[in-house]
Image (cartoon, rainbow, N blue to C red):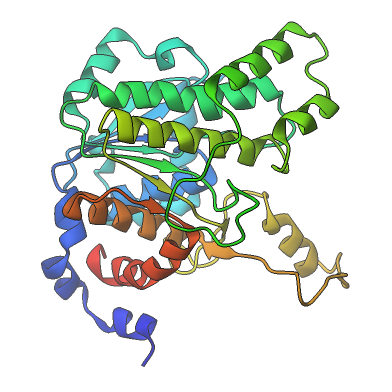
Length: 345
């Protein structure tokens, strides 16, 4: 019997009795950023559906396209991915605290009241928000992915009850490292360089040139992994110099759900999803590739979330300083399966 089948064999009653992870999240105050994105949606759904004894889940949301944050969240929760949640935990909104915030703004755009509320209560910060598109202005991407991360780290240092700051990065943050070890690597830039690039881009009506971007990023393919690698170094600095309890989580390419909340569910058209759709639609029949060099590191979104939540529990429970790389995530897959089918279900 496979590990998956064995995990599924355990009953819901057994899982509830033996769940260390579920017990860990009971009573916690969690701050989540990026909850409207693909990965963030499943993090949000998973916590509300399975960690029903949390105290509060604070979700940081900004206005977008003339939509108030309440309207954005209503639209999000109308998605079919939350159908199982509505059936199993119809009172889930009682745990939610909607907070206006914007990583692009000074002090994260938080009101004094909301900032004080977070500082006084938050135990866990999951920083998942980032700009993943490549067609935005460099200044916007860097302000959110790097400067916004630093602002959130500053907020974290003010939280006396904080147990962990979990930063969601990418397995491709350091492209020269084929095999990622569980450690931090030298960053491609410091804050001064990032601020200089932002200033140059904003002062020039046409923005910074593509040639200048290539000179800045160097070995990094584009500004996205460049920004994530730089943000990782900020997390490391706050962890070492300010004793902030933190982890960096590096998933690879996140694809459709393996099992939950709905098998095969995917909520965007990014990465390989559009490519797979084209194959399914019969638009792509032949792919030119090198068998010896063509690899795709894919991980289902539900396994990604399960491993993330299990990693947070593991760090806090054992209190060691670690960076979670793609290799460690693979070792956590067994935990993810158990977490998926047993611990929280």
